[in-house]
Amino acid sequence: MAVTDFHYYEPSKGHGLSHNPLNALVAPRPIGWISSRDAQGRVNLAPYSFFNAFNYDPPIIGFSSIAWKDSVQNASETGEFVWNLVTRELGDKMNQTSAPHPHGVDEFPLAGLTAVPGRVVNVPRVAESRAAMECKVIDIVQFRNTAGEKVGGWLALGEVVAVYIDKSLLKDGVYQTADAYPIMRSGGLNDYVQVTPETVFQINRLADVSSPSSHGTS
Image (tube, rainbow, N blue to C red; front, side, top):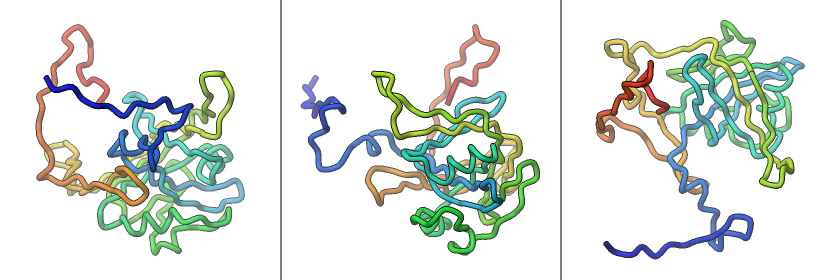
């Protein structure tokens, strides 16, 4: 077996590279395209590359921000947010909503997107998005380091209370992820990857017969 020559570093001492590799190592990452509303009723729409699902029942998703930005502040004030799926045709519009704007600016019209009122929450979803999830905030956690000191990063967790799925993406009751052509963040500032039907392959899951559920966590 060939010996691998590793670049080793301890983050607290610096990575010694021209660009922090964390985002490239943990990739691709699903995009949390989050719409929210502040206490004054103003709408915000912004993408977050630190996003994922964390639980089945109840369904819980969350997004993380490295600063106290509008989406986290709004979620904290009103207790609600909406996740919107980013597909290839929406990539440029999503990117437009990532531009820095003063608090209170509505990114929907700036990106040429249509806001549809929520059914369970008072936050609009992106009409052009082929899937969306309305959420009620269950927790907002500020991160700490190993010394127990608070750092400038927050995780907003929400219970999914309503789901929208383009019916054309359902086949025999199963959501066809690749048919939506979602895009995800990968690597540096400008890198993305796209899921397509041609890139999907199968690995049979090993069921845990000792557990009442064999769905696992992925």
